[in-house]
Length: 266
Image (cartoon, rainbow, N blue to C red):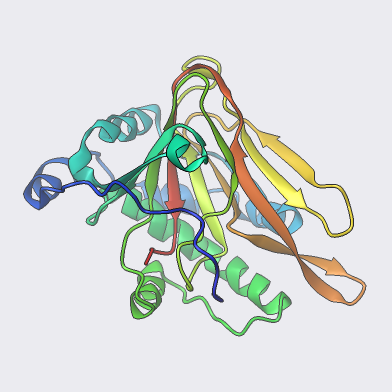
């Protein structure tokens, strides 16, 4: 949780009608078993992949209906605190919106239940890299650390790309306190709703060529990946391998994803 440069600006703040957010849309999507679905994933495999590569696919978590309902939220600005048009900042071609608090219930359930599974990985990585920070067991406790550091703005977001859209390689750091893993859920059907738009991870290896991983998650599936770097065993202990992520060009249709960032922003 050491200091890090903020990579993504917060721009175009939206006017939010709190009454509409609280009473109309937040509870629109039915929830109840999302935590049990998260807990029943093949975590031994997922954790092994994270330690080995810095990323892992979960298999399908969200139902098609949940994906449709989440995607439909994008058009309601009352649910979001700000919007970023990527081209204005040379981030790529597309746009994304940050949810405001209170988050939709399903987003909160995913954020909290995933964090609980990943906190042990975060602490293991911190220890291997010689850090002194400790990530608490629950997400609510972790958010208290964000608040104490002046980070109170929610970071879960929805991203949308049309044909020709893409996202340049980047990292999502929003302040001094950050969680070393994050998650993205695919909400559309690859090859049916859109083509292209693969999720790209590029690992910058010391004294070697960078290595790219190109993923095509299914609708409802998530990819968990490192926010900044992962530890790799060397001859003199562990060292940091930097990883950035992005999205390749969408060649047809529209692509929507839900991003779960576990730390809040300044």
